[in-house]
Image (cartoon, rainbow, N blue to C red):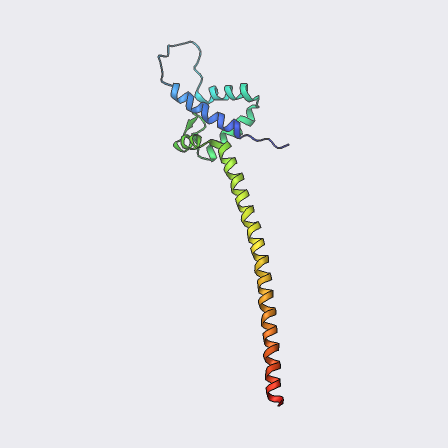
Length: 147
């Protein structure tokens, strides 16, 4: 079972940015309830949208931390690299670019194999021509000295 979490990770980055944009908008009044931190808010949104388990979401956060798109896990803060990465298409675009690069390398390998085959044939033709000319000159030398 191969699960691709690119969409979820892109969603987490997007929601982090949205939460930071809305963090100091408006006035917040004192409430009896403890306010949720950014990580909890984003975690709830991811749980509701993708139905992921808590450990899966934590692994996604850890991956974002390792990739340096997130500065801290608690409190969850995004880095400049994360903003730039999200604006460049995120993990989904990264996967597309990797696939294109794999296809380009495969095409180069196929071209190399075709050119190496043609070079081998060219070398064989040159070798055959060299052998024919060598035999011709050997026959001519033998004719000259046999007189």
